[in-house]
Amino acid sequence: MLLEGAKRLAEGERPKISDMLLTPGNAIKLTNQLANLRGAAMKLGQMLSMDASDFLPPELSEILARLRADAQYMPQKQLLKVISSQYGSDWQDRFEDFQMRPVAAASIGQVHRATTADGRDLAIKVQYPGVRESIDSDVDNVASLINLSGVVPKSLDIAPMLSKAKLQLHQEADYEQEAAYLKRFGKLLKDAPDFQVPALHKDLTTGHVLAMSYIDSAPIESMASASQRERNRIIKLLFSLMLRELFEFRLMQTDPNFANYRYNHETRQLVLLDFGATRAVPKRVANQYRKLVIAGMAGDREAAQKAAIKIGLFDDSAADHHQEAIMDMFEMAMAPLRKKGPIDFSDNAIAQDLRDEGMRFAAARDFWHVPPVDTVFIHRKFGGVYMLANRLKAKVDVGPLLKDYL
Image 1 (cartoon, rainbow, N blue to C red):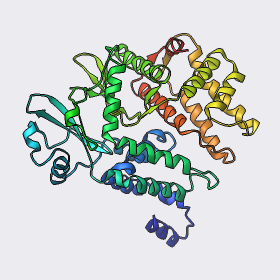
Image 2: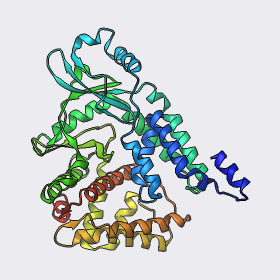
Image 3: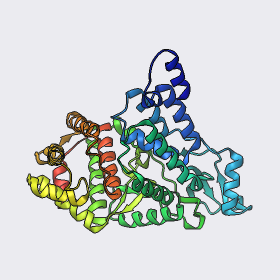
């Protein structure tokens, strides 16, 4: 960035810091570094590439999107050191076969296929060394970049959210906790034959290694070429699951990365992966969302506004014109749900209108507001399912699904 600034100054310009930071060349460098760093830095880059892709120039979104699939593998020597530290020096006696090249790599760990000595076909997730120790400094460094870019007003206190982000990432790096959530979701969905959750293999699971059954499946994005009927079915299932998580289980897997959903062509089941970002939904929060949606479906603006304030989407100290504008956006989002028949998620008109309104709020810096972290994670899940519905160009009647939980 300094080199870019020096170059522009030499050409007689007076560049802004944010302009120098967000050049395509710098985005490529940043993406390469985040992919090498892995851990929390890469995770935050992934979140930016998904959550902010509509707000960034297309070339930057495309570059950052690489972070959703481009983690660097551990060198074999490092991998062997991690496995030996978790399983002991005689770890190979436990396996008939252990494939050294991972079948997948993400921000916190990489996945290897293995066959145990007693014949179990497993997917074994191995955590990158040093990930836990670097979380706090990674989050602080990315926060410094955000502050330096000038994107967020200095008056906005993001410290509470950063603290929650660190806590969430520490939890995601705890594979024993993820194992517990994996097992719990397996039980919660035992009555749902359309879903498949890998079975936990506790004898080979530690704080840094997670062992589960291997399920042969395809990336969910590959279903974009499937029949319209099957694409509609997939998204209907995911909307139903999201509503069950919020209102019935009160336990939600909040990471909307598409890689966490896969498709079993043989059984037509949706395979659910990666429960590290699972969060409990407090009963009061679920109840307020229920009230919000009931009011929205009934067109009761006053009741919806009260529920939105209790959820923390804004507070009653906000200027009246800001509150009115937010409720206008809410009604804009609810309008398709009140109509009879399926919503065509390939139609981006409403999403673009909401994005444009959101950008106007971003420009009105007297209104910037950090909502409760529970709300942030829930809305990330909403957004992720919506984006997948858009990617698969699904047509789903969501209204009846909502009514089942209201």
